[in-house]
Length: 343
Image (cartoon, rainbow, N blue to C red; front, side, top):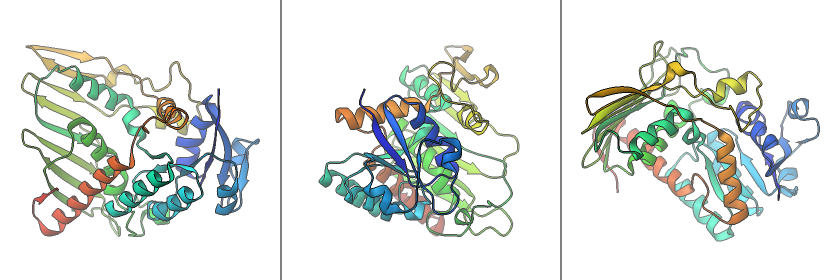
């Protein structure tokens, strides 16, 4: 099996948790190492890989795929350099800070005939996969309204300076919002209009840390919410259709398992506890709907297939462009207090 040599541009939280473990165990990838500016940590976890001293060393290496997992406001410049060096790129969300940047990177990748993928790993969460199946199987009929939440109780400011600095890539809308906007567009398509309330709720914060977004479709409304002051979470997925309803708490366990140092596998990885099972109500009956397994190795499968067999990447730059258009419309709506139409 051909192996895709892969390098990371950072080995912080995302590199250590979400990228290195999967590229290390996946049979189609070879983890070369990571660019580490100061702390040299990757070799403690993976002694056989390399800690690159500069971006140039990474770009000049024999890596076929480079993961841009740096702060959001650096994504455009670094991804541009990766593509110009003739490397395929996997870019953390939020993809860019503007839709125009997303469009430029998409065009550059096409000109270079390279694969450009956005790391929308939450499409491979157990809870989202389950919610998606309920819609695909048409249990509850035509959707009238839906709600997707990604909430936490985290009132303290982040110790990571870039996350609290007020730069264009730092906000809950860019961070958690880019996930659930992507999920909404995946499930329901591109909306016609957007209305949003975006606020700052933590003491001394410089970034927006709360949002409530309403997506307008001709036949439905979809609400997206996130906050750092949710001590007792409500269901993350609430769908009401003309034949029934579906409610499901956020229950994917992959991030927690990774934080415990567990190694991903193909068998029992990403299996939710039974108490997180969603509730499906339709045809005058209520039942617990079986939760599908979540596994980010499946993302790696799809990315491998895209690079080796010239298939479409699992999350495209064009899709990320649409996500950025919604984010920009939400920001404009919150600033003006108006409903914003999307082209």
